[in-house]
Image 1: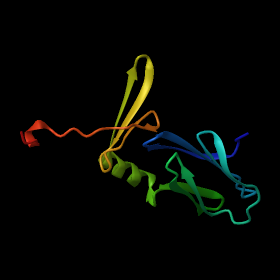
Image 2 (image 1 turned 180 degrees about the vertical axis):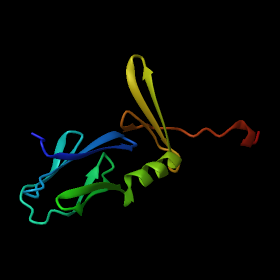
Image 3 (image 1 turned 180 degrees about the horizontal axis):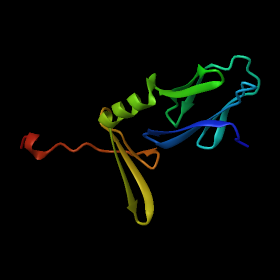
Image 4 (image 1 turned 30 degrees about the vertical axis):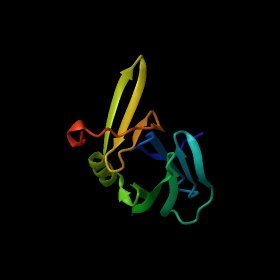
Length: 141
């Protein structure tokens, strides 16, 4: 049961949008991280209430970290980093390097992602085999 959830983030990657949930027991120091509903880290008794938890997200095992900082008294601030950047910066950069389309295809919600830097194409979390077509303009007879 997740009753100490203090932060929830959605992280858009090529293989889909992943939900990261963080539980922090401010009296016990308990730390639990769930990705897409699956528990991936659990630390029940932590004497140090602040710190950092490092984990991976998605099929590509993208490195992520949750930072726990004291704000005042028993108030804490939780921030998520993805690939060493704040989630906001990561999302801004990603919008420049990937194009995402969400559509209803034959009654099925479909998510297509084009990675502009690698030209990889993903459909519903799976990479697709693609072929490059050279326009006839560049072909010699």
